[in-house]
Length: 160
Image (cartoon, rainbow, N blue to C red; front, side, top):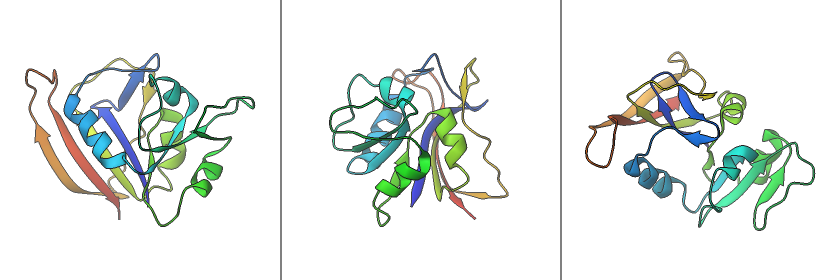
């Protein structure tokens, strides 16, 4: 199963200048719980936005830079090669960025989305979720509080 996991604003914004636009600790906890122990596929810029590789996950990095490498990470030059490396019997997570999401939404089986209830100026966006293709199967609203500056909703979609 291929799952796209992302935090997405109301206007589909993901980030700007390779940075997230919000800080939602509960979203980070959910991301960690869902992806730990799995293969995670990402573009090079997404990988470089982390202070270090994420623990207890196998990193598959897509880049066109021929000499790019990072210790204990798998580096490939296409989404197809990234998916081929991952065990087909296990859930694989695609974690960004925008270009990788756009390439992979057509082949994904599931979307785990944190919908941030605000619109942001951004330079990276998540593709439109076509409700003719996707069915919302889970939704859990969280109001803003002292740790979260914005209302947000955890959503899970399955391909129809």
